[in-house]
Length: 411
Ligand SMILES: Cc1ncc(COP(=O)(O)O)c(C=O)c1O
Image (cartoon, rainbow, N blue to C red):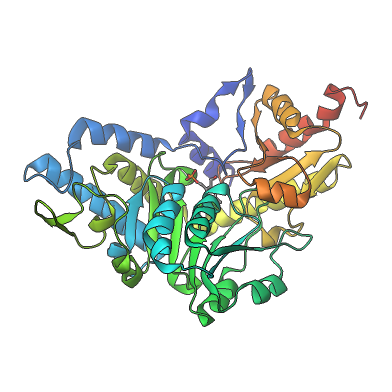
């Protein structure tokens, strides 16, 4: 394990930096992960050897770019166990994928008086598009609320998803609390009323094996940058029959079949939903990141991250001054821990930790309704990746113990 860890960490140049004259401890992986040199090198090679516009040219470089882009699509398909590469649409990020679903799919599905169901855990990216659809269509947005551990109550699922529900859009894993939601139960429940289910996989796809068929969902979104890939590449998965029904969101080059002065017909899936020149280097970066993850093995990644999370949870639970949010049971959560130190604003905690070289996130984590529901202004969030270590957690906990003293509280 020691050698494995040393080898892994050597792949991530950013991790060996000094920040504030201290070795960087990067615990902001839920915001974005660092990139292995395999991904960084792939991007350099792309621009040195292949750069060309895909799907458009008959020359070698364009054909090569097209191959790279379509290989990346097939790699994503296998990674999430989708049936067809036509079900994989490349986007900018999870946010763009959700907006495409809201404006190309939901706007044609939802009618006045219908209901859209989300949870109070949602990241703003999986809330604001539904607020817009509800407003524009005269529909109602309903929320699934939480038990005291941050889990979604069964009674909420059973009472809020009804025959009026047209869509359920729900996060797989909360970016703010780390809780993992009962997706199969929600999907089964929604489908019995004919409602469609969108899964926000931004926090789960990087950390667990995803089989879209087994989950039973209709659509899923995620971002490459949270799973070792560059920023600017994301994915929208959808069942082929549903994507086929969707009208394009963006119109222009690459997404057409025939164009006349006053009329155009559109290309087949997936191109119909990918207008304009695409982010080929981003797709290549995502493919390289997925290959890197597959080489380690998702089961191993999950085991390392679960071990780090339960280790950190136990250490933090032993600190009297720390208030923890979300499930106390590490089996119900991913590698995200939200907490506050009594009497200390999370921004102060994060700044003091930064002076020790420890990078954590403080704030509302783009989940203001959740913060309001929990009656707190913000939290401090430590989020781990498989490249983190227990020694880093020890240092983080020792640094945390100094925070109250720094602010003059004695202990
Ligand atoms: C659960 C969740 N959904 C959606 C997003 C939005 O991701 P992006 O900003 O990459 O579009 C995030 C980002 O933190 C997230 O954590």
